Length: 153
Image (cartoon, rainbow, N blue to C red):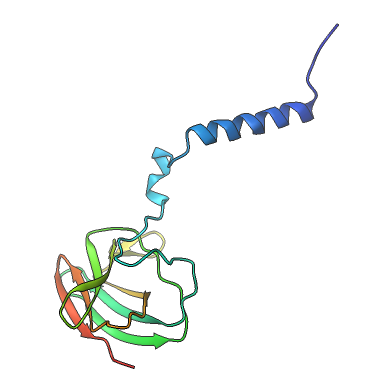
């Protein structure tokens, strides 16, 4: 008597085995670790992927050899916080006493194009939360820091 499993049964068993292995070995695959999105450090509860009623859209430039500049800071009616890869640069929101009330670290690579070519500056646009007692926006990089007053409504 010849007992062979049908192709449907083999596929089902293969999928179930993969699920069980994935469950026990959950986590990033070492070879693909550089594609994972890391969550920013924040003094607020995580609100990513949630539409917030009011936010700030910040357009700023980062330079390879000098301090960053803020091009614009615009209040928007609603928005979702930008999720950035964690790194050595920081963007902070300070209150009137210069206490950090929101902080997000981020990484930047001065490369652009396909194939990637080195550049001297990068422009970024990110969305930050609208916090009632926010007073100053600070961008900190190894090349220096810049401060920008947050307008009151």
